[in-house]
Length: 189
Image 1 (cartoon, rainbow, N blue to C red):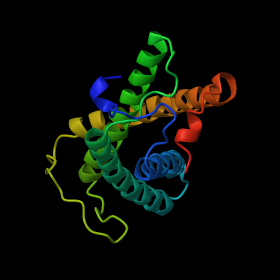
Image 2: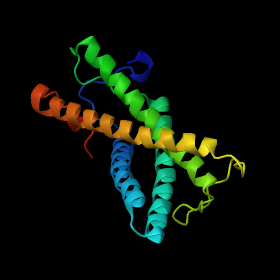
Image 3: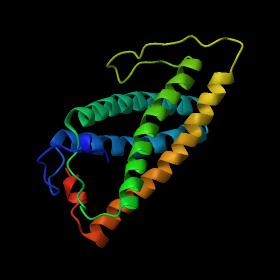
Image 4: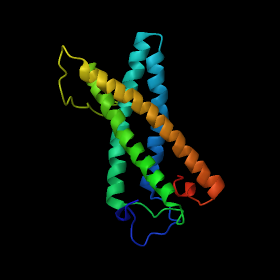
């Protein structure tokens, strides 16, 4: 983990700030709901039900994108507490950093690819009555190539995210029950 992300003078047992913890758990809850909504929309037996679920999936995706922008901005501005496990092996730290970077990347790729698909479908771009997401491009009427690419990116990124979330949760449980290093308590609300 780059030194610049750790604040000078911070202690290894320090909890994450309340906003960081709130954003973490809001995004985590949103991801689990999104997986269910995406699956339900794709498997709905009635077209209208699928369309309503997909619209809800889009709206929550845009909300998650906004939360991730806040989360990434907060992280860049304020850094992170030092790692909880000071004596962690270098390969574990590198693996954790790679998993976290991949989680962040996917949590941006998924809503952005979903946005491309949604604009291509000419779906309603309102977000829970809070406003409209702007249309940043006009898809060509006779070419579906980029929509198909966005769909594959979205689909496979969702599977990759599910796998990384499972790995992330397993690592958290390992820290809690095997290492007993209080890492999980730093993140609890």
